[in-house]
Image (cartoon, rainbow, N blue to C red):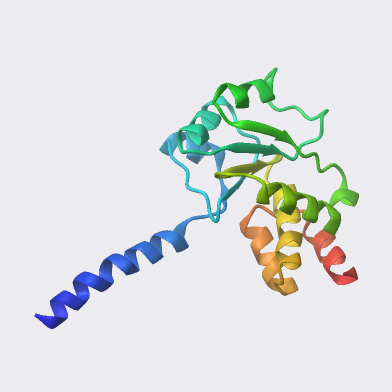
Length: 173
């Protein structure tokens, strides 16, 4: 009987931990639209360019802000992306990260300050998630993570082709 009570207490806790571990900070927009749901990790989700259907899912999931890390001249797949975000009730913030020179600790500090001022879950996006992952890796480093942990966090958040740039910035820090 004691074993049954213990299992009844432990199994839900293990399931909750497994659910938390199974969540990814970087999501595929197609999967978000297909599943109709998305859950932030520590208040943040990273993605590539969202479409209108994905924006609706993020809004319906309680997201407060969309931080757009794409440059002003980049194609967002719709005429008025900011208007589409705001039509869902979310706030739109332009935070362009353009070119390798923008992958630096100043950008990471600015993003950190921006995120600290947001009340509610945030979608961070660029074209693919690569820039998001790069800046989040540097933010992790600023928070005290060692270089490899910061890189891994960045990869989990979408870092791919910019990994050598991030490694160089970390090395010079």
